[in-house]
Amino acid sequence: MTTCDALQNANLLYRTCNINILLFDYRGYGKSTGAPSEAGLYTDALAVYNYVRKRNDLDQNKIFLFGRSLGGAVALNLASQLSQTNATPPLYAVIVENTFTSIPDMAKRLFQVSVLDYVPNWCYKNVYPSLSKMRSIKVPILFLSGGQDELVPSQMMEKLHEECKSSKKQLAVFPDGQHNTTWLSHDYTSRIRKFLAECSTSMPTESSTSTDLI
Image (cartoon, rainbow, N blue to C red; front, side, top):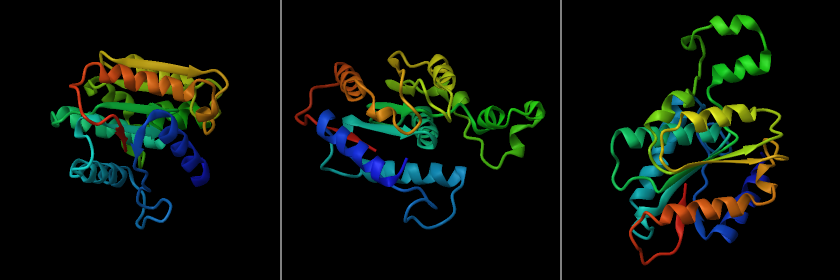
């Protein structure tokens, strides 16, 4: 997805879902300096999260994460980390779109070489083991999956959904959605609005009516 597409997607969500949005470039991406790494991206996401938590002008009971593709893996790691540390207040929700179960799983899918089945995870520079982190995520979570995703097979999103132990989990499949264009699918924003509205039914009444997205 290009920066232009990402901004258009963010603008669509801002206009239709009544949310505030914070976008950022990981280290080594866009205009951010440094070199990307799994640990580095996790650190960057936590830093942005901590920044948002210090903002007195935001409803701290309605902070949620959104991640697409690689960003989904980073969001799931942060959600797992916060759940394990019993962060207060807890995340309002998590939304991930077209993300993968792990880098080793993606390598096997892309290269289709049987020898990769025997390569241990420590041989990979980056792993992003999202599937193994799903059991610790207890906050509401929405999985957005493009049925025609040409990069990340929709079966990976199904596995993540199945492994998740949240009592409020949803899987929305958009039959014609591709990896970078699922957000253009019919009912995309309505599914997100519906999910966020359902999350609010279990939250205390707040004076603010907007929700804040990292």
